[in-house]
Image (tube, rainbow, N blue to C red):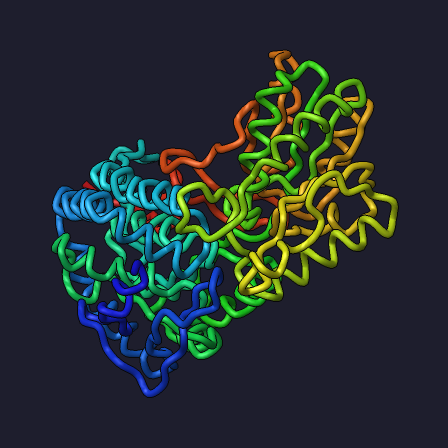
Length: 485
């Protein structure tokens, strides 16, 4: 059985390239079946302090390691991930629930950050700045921030971690990582990758924890931790901003979204339908950049709704280990309750269910967390499904008349992570891309994420960027030397 590979593996707190036990354990469960896959140690404050000690001790040698050598290790880590992709993907599906095809894709995506930032490690350049006096020279250096704490979510348990680890290591930083309590195994599997890639002890430390508070309090109180990077909810992000003030740590945040997906009347409708399905229903709608509000111009609203509903109705729901599954379970019952609340609110205010709208029948729903892919028509902006991030397989369709109207509706949110629109008018493409108040824009592209582009939001969707040439800047300090000659 696939779960046997988990039961036969060692999972512990990963410090100094060794797996350690702790005083307490917690269970990791399969959201598709409810079975306990294994138990992992529950890291507390003392474990976090030990990880900080290890990362701080490893920092001087790692930061002094030539960039070309760090790059070689990152490329080796990427190669090992691809070599072990089937194992890593299966473990991810078991603990997170997404279809195996999506897990395989995530492993390739996760590995690409090691490959990309290996190259960026070799291009951390300084500058010579023209001085204001003839007897001076000004040199600008870029040096690693230091020890970094990285906190990641459950929806992309490998890619969200490598997107942070790769630039940190490329810059010469050492790291302490806390994966989400729902999906610690994907992170802990990376420990073996780092050992086999030759990355020295203490450079990467991984701490599974059921309660994040002892970890967070310890890292924020310790002056040796100079940067925190977090992906998760805006509510938690606000808490971390306040906590970072006590030791003035650098902080990067990738927070919540409320992505608009706009279909103009000059769009290629078939492409727009395909893009909307891919954006909305990937990972059962549990992605931070998935389409949350689908705006369709009146002239094509009915035609789009018909094509889109037909495509959604054909999505197969089931265990992620089944080869034809397209939609897996929601991560847990709180997620199910939110989806239920959003659909019920929309219907009570006049929305029409075109397909789905309920959990899968009980005989096909062992955990109760499988939700049928849902399309809602006649949705209005005052419904919960448009005001909040649903994080589930529910697609609300909203009618609009003009470009100015839909831009106002799309931007009417405190969030600004991602936005999408479909149009074949090149002037409109440029105009709308400039006016949308979001950090990531997909113009006729529903899947814009890539390691070589800067990922991040504006407004209450976060601070900083991950990926691309900008991604390594988050882990570098700038120092200048004024030298008399």
